[in-house]
Length: 91
Image (cartoon, rainbow, N blue to C red; front, side, top):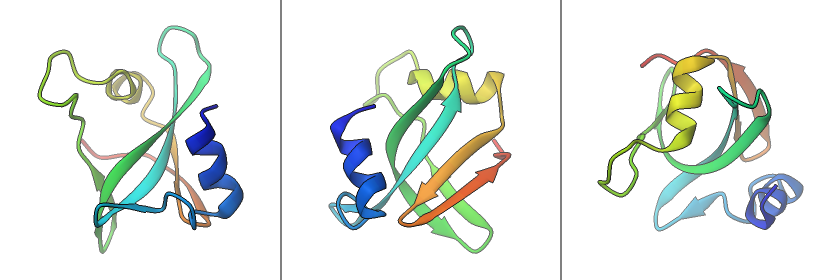
């Protein structure tokens, strides 16, 4: 686990819950090859029915690893501030 993820979790999003005006959530996916849990901080946009994240790799190909994990195993967990929500994303 990265220091950033640990601080976000311990502070319940008070540290790292927002960056440059974006809300930040922690997305936990299951590795498609390893089967291990992986958590990444992502900028997110709030919607009435949930959150939107963009699978960008700074405009590079391929897409980020978490995207491939999500496509392989759509059951994820998202932490937004102090709320941890299991969900099935819509792509």
